[in-house]
Length: 415
Image (cartoon, rainbow, N blue to C red; front, top):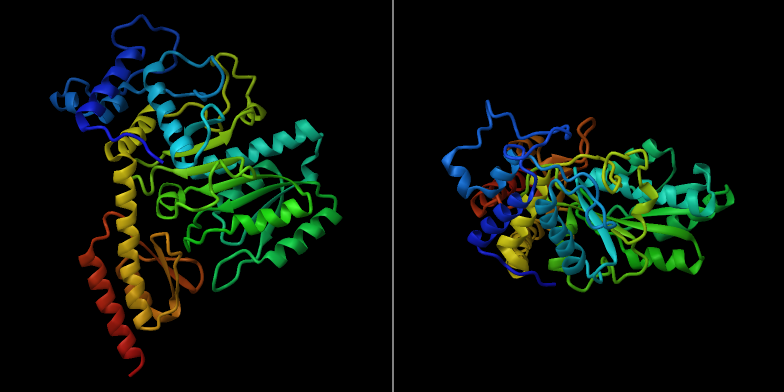
């Protein structure tokens, strides 16, 4: 796990060099592209600060990264310069973070983890339809009760069957007995093909599904499945804080990952990343996109090249070693919260390698949760849990103030 750290000067130079290789709306004879630079009445391009602002300059230049640039030899060449930066970003994510061998994967910067998760379901549905002549009634998606809502959303969009697994109320682990029973019932009802979603950090709890237990059972009974990893939250932290884990491309049971740049990376919203093994994206080729050179394999179609450049810039300014330090600092700060909660016998859930603490709502007033903007597990009913996420803006002083007020509530509670 290593990628080189660049200085800001190096990053600026590489971004502007990439922009110079793109087609320029202002200087070239372009009359066939249904796009242009950002409206100059409000986004003027001659502001003096732009010469030192590579991301904003890219945003104003407005490159379209439609298509997938790791797939095939043909793709839109109008924005080839910044597309190369996206390819380098995908290489860092696939090879350095998730241990893929060179040239064994494809990927692109999606609009977020939701799109990336649905892209995976779409690919595997079509894979089963084409390779096994499966009907949608023979395909089911398996996921835990703590899974992000994007998976049920994708199931609804793609008209697939749904198998939701129980989780243990304390450990938040998938109940393997429930997995066994529901797979057995699904097979009896004519389900032949399975799309498995594993969570590398759930949204509410930060729990990590035990992928080895799940795949051990699936492989033992010879289930026909494709496995997708939802790493939208955990993808840029868990591999750094738990080096000895099974969530990587060395694990032959994994076919794809989703990760989000707009969470841990502090990138603008709209920077999810989809990664998949080679020869899978072909199942979602939109042949009708004949006017797009190289066709389109994504759910979103046109997408901002600036967002891809921004994520590349963030990873390069830190380098792998700097990013490792930053993520471990967040985990250490999270651990300090848990030490206090243990002292006060407050019930909570926290995965030791992640920066989420989910506190039992019985141990905290609604007023305190609202004051510090803690997220409840349910906005419509009485919450069972409140979530703390230790992000870079969460400083020690904020934590100290919150913990003092929480401690005072415990004293009043037991008077």
